[in-house]
Image 1 (cartoon, helix red, strand yellow):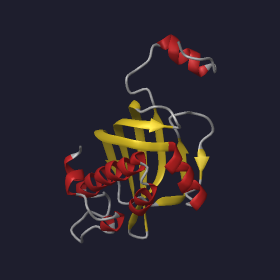
Image 2: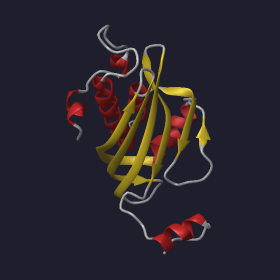
Image 3: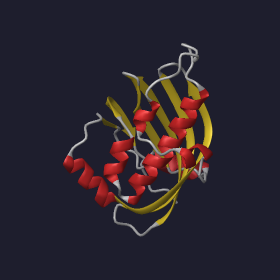
Image 4: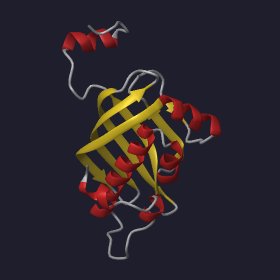
Length: 175
């Protein structure tokens, strides 16, 4: 678990604003640390199936994009609905999560986190298994609150061969 996650208790509103001492041109390191912790705590809740806690913690932008680890056309929009929540509750079950930060980039109103997420979770009705995802998160500050604007994840954290990548690229099953 990222060290900041241990201390992260408050909802995302705790990320509301920078102090007067902060540079107007860069997000303080503490914001990056808080966003790392927020990402870990909120996604751990989602993988447990605690969708309400996930949405309590994370704010999605109206133009949110998701490039899921299963590929296909990216989804758009940060709409939250009872039907969406119920679908997510059925999709993720009993998961655990740890996050390894790879890199972060931050400005005054935009932060990008590159992470490795390591989960053990039942997904889509399949038995629980380990998932290692390479993840990129883009947060944007809107009205003094950090919101998630983009998530891209792929299941290639353990690596694949060039022939496997070629098979995926042409739409064939990887062997």
